[in-house]
Image 1: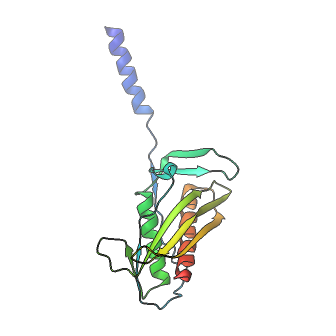
Image 2: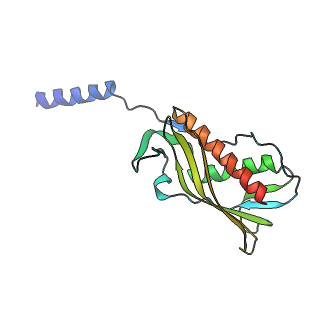
Image 3: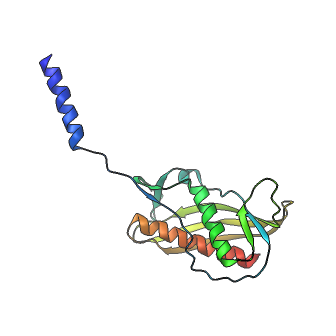
Length: 184
């Protein structure tokens, strides 16, 4: 019995010395690098963003350009739902570029003149390589008639840390916002 108690005490003490690392959380944010390019006063709604299944998790997922292997970081995470963060960042970037327009998430009863749908097929990168954002966007009427559809692929250096990677993806979303604003 004494051996069992001693063993349990040793296990409890080991737990005090071997703590799990804290997680670090990252945001995608509007880069505000683009200047106003449109004076149009229109209502635009951004539909929910779609992502591949492997990105629909709180952990940041990295991928080398020449490898099918994914690195899922347990302790480096997105600060909120990735799809929602992408949608909000895209809206903020569009609002910077089109300051006279009203740009919001698509809601029921919306009076939007244009609806933007974005399907992200790849959001990847790796330290010392490029961050990549690739997919398809559509600009639709409220009756779901496609006005414009275009593929996109943007790249920028990913940096050497997770914070650099988050900033790189934010810059790529600004590039996407600029591309969409020019098409409207």
